[in-house]
Image 1 (cartoon, chains in turn yellow, purple):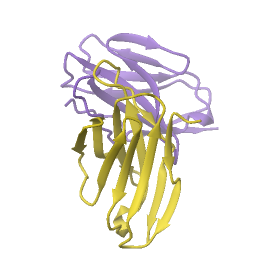
Image 2 (cartoon, helix red, strand yellow):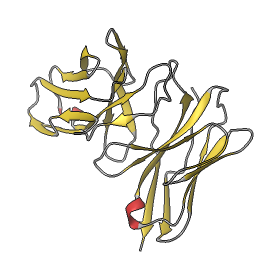
Image 3 (spheres, each protein chain N blue to C red):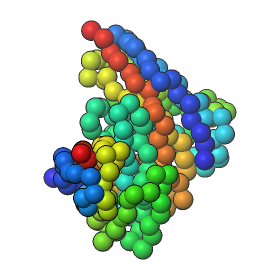
Length: 114
Length: 111
């Protein structure tokens, strides 16, 4: 099994629908992140969490929300999806304060909003 | 937060050595340099991390000069499968560092 698992891997939805992307990890890492990638661009940070009780906005959090249900689970929600949220979404984890901050990524969730 | 600058794209041929340089003029004392590789439609994968001088693993070497204002990722004898985007990140190990990605360097290896 993968260290970082994202579900679903692919999703097509319509404008206005609520969508949840889920991420679970077996690394035992404290820190979890959600990134978005658009074609030809780098990864942009949506939200991050340094532990279960810590949630922080990244550079492009508008239109998104997150939930850290447990150390191992970090979900990203689009309350009302719009077409410009069509992108590839990545979840990542890293160790906490004593770690090397090396990121482990999931395989990605491709979201298409029609 | 140390800003990084790397070439947008590079081309090479199979069997050649490829060097990708990243500039990070305002690197802080506690910052490490980390490189990731990303294939199309896959998540980035850690390649190598270093603080100073030279680090080598089974995939690549990382050269860091004494002033640490730049670093060079060296891929020996590249193959077609090394075609990918390579990202250079600079930040402290642990602490409050938030990993931020630029556009990376798109390496295309030709037959």
